[in-house]
Image (tube, rainbow over all chains, first blue to last red; front, side, top):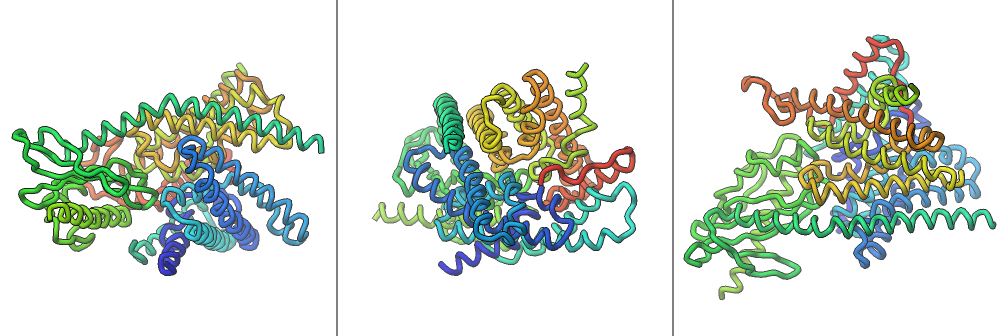
Length: 195
Length: 180
Length: 203
């Protein structure tokens, strides 16, 4: 049981990293990775939403969609709605409880609604028929994997800023090439665990 | 307060409309989807059991779906069953054929999968599939030792291999206990 | 004249992939073969076209505060419709695209166009804008798919084009190949054109 959860966790963080091998959450990965501290805040906010939405969508699937046989055609609509309202609620909650936290994390929350990693995570957990505990661990691992990838990326990009790069490669080009090399590095994890 | 009630109302109306449209579209498309799935399943029985003339259900309950393939004379010459398990992205559903005379696997066919296009999706291509044909029922086989994994899709390859070995054991147990 | 301008911009000047860096998840994930890129492009274009039309029709009825959730519901509805139709009538394509059909919901091209264009323009221009952007997205994905398929599998649309002595560069159809191919293409494009690709419009 515990071993099972650990495997799911390591799988989501390293082996099948959401960004670098599943291509989920690539937009924030490219867009919000200029500075390490900003990237880290984005990662933490995403991890938080991912873990909570993994639980919320599991509840919806198990107690509403499955019993009434609605999963095939109401799944996408209900999941995006749940995720959007969850993000809104977290935003309101953080705003009221802590100003500092709101300033460091809150600004990223609206962007997270359209982060495909969140919806992707919810759909993957359903496809894999995870139970609640497995879904939570999967969500947490996916979030930490996302944070890891985006922070490493931001660290590299801070260095690249001062490097001499051909004019045409500056900006988007070099960012994608860097991501490609990072992705090769993460391919090395693919033999780490056997399912 | 009155304003937020109005907002909630509007959003509910939109959700209701969306739900109504979707259930309509679903009711139109679902018979076709089921027909396609059923046709695929029936066709796949003939594909994994070459040489059969007809088939009949051997066992059909929640745990297992097993068919018997019949020759022209009405003898059972093979078994075909549906196996389902976790892959890299989602569920993998296979139809697996067993030849009774040689006690070997004939081949398998992918009924459903959600593996990565171009990589894991190759579990549905001949190059990978043929490695399983003529494998004996009772000798377990493994990726790397007996089966060459698809490049870039080790997990999918392993998932299919394990699904086949595991389900084969289950089927043999069911069939074996029925015979005694 | 304006209609022509709204159509043509999506093909190159505001091409979602090569100039705006939008919709990166499907762009990178499904372009390991030409046919996958083409199918994904068409499915996305359908959802964009339908959502743009509906939103430009009902834009006055939706209060500003809830426009994002309302748009998301509309988009998710059309994605489900596309998903059901593909599953029923084109099961092979449906099998190939897999998880990335539902993820069209959160493709920022769609929400981006709906919010920045359809919510401000009439139905005709919104439809034309969607067709332009849809075609722009589709050709970009197909081109990426063709390049990756040639090097990675030695074929185009499944037809072998390389001689049998060609060693397949498998890295092209693996995840890193997606990043590297697009990176090199942006390098070439940005070296040749005066304006630069923006660094991600949606985060």
